[in-house]
Image (cartoon, rainbow, N blue to C red):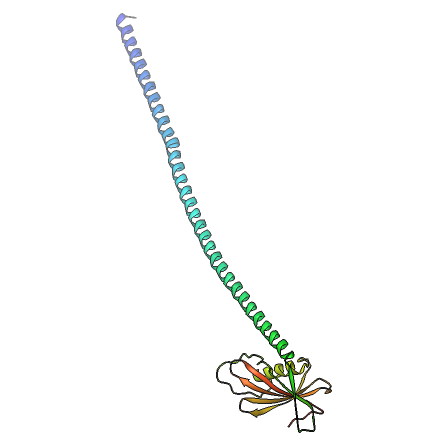
Length: 229
């Protein structure tokens, strides 16, 4: 083999080796670039997603917290309102009870005073009258206001208050007392005939109306038998 042929083969081999080396380097560079690109996609994209998810989660948490705060504020407001209403209702109930107790105490005091009034015997020409007496009794009180016109109907406020006055001055038990008759005794005056349940104690009571204070007993007659006039 001539020197020329040997040189030609060496040149070809060297050229082929250089080309192979260049291709290998290029493949390595491309591989490195691919790895860098994939790493960027994976790690860089993951960070963005994480950041977005974090921001979204923080936003949701903030919204939930605001809603909870609003609910708590509304609940506190409702509780405050309910508390005020309940307190007002309790105060009104206490006031009503105090008023009722005061009225009851006043009525009891008036009843005691009327029961202790000194009585003065008076003459009567009626043969049915066992005894008659007057006294400085107090009006028994009333729930009526304004100009007064006597209502004689059963269950009326006048009939209720007349019965209470009759029980106070006779000592009869109002719960079992029998009212036989109530009639006109003059201008703003009435007469009432009452007895106990077995008619062994029978009374006729004369009463006069006192504005804003109720019926005032003026005379009591104890009877032998019931008179209904």
